[in-house]
Image (cartoon, rainbow, N blue to C red; front, side, top):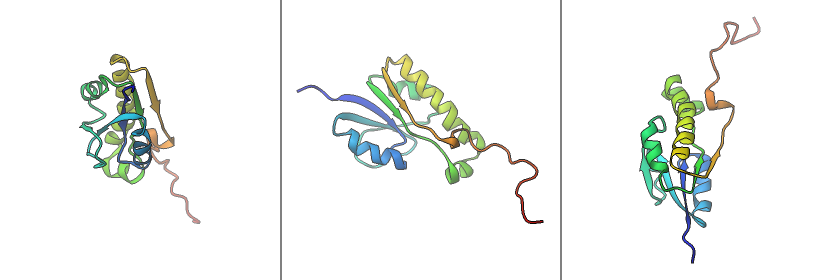
Length: 130
C-alpha cells in the first residue's frame, strides 16, 4: 500500500478548516499549523503565521499546504489591525515562501474581501437621516 501524502493545514480550528480536516484525513496525513490546537486528534504544530521560521519549519517534509487560516470580523476587531494584517497578509507571504523553500509542490490558498481588512472609515461615515 502506498503511504499517504502529507499536508499542512492552517486554520483547522475555523469553519472551513474544521470541515476540511476530516475529509482530508481519508487520503492524507494531516498536520495542523495553529496558534491553538483544534483538539481533533490530528498532529498539531503550534506556531504563529507571522513567524517565517516557524512556518518554514512546519512546511518541511510536506507534499502540500492548505492555507485557510485568517482573522476576520470580530476576531480581527479584538486582535487589532496590526495583528489582523500580520496574520492575513504577512502570514500568507510566509506560507508561500516557506512552502517554496521547503520544496512543497502544491499550495492551496483561500481568501475573501476581509484578507486585508476594511481600511479606515471615510469621515462621512456613518451616514444617518440627518
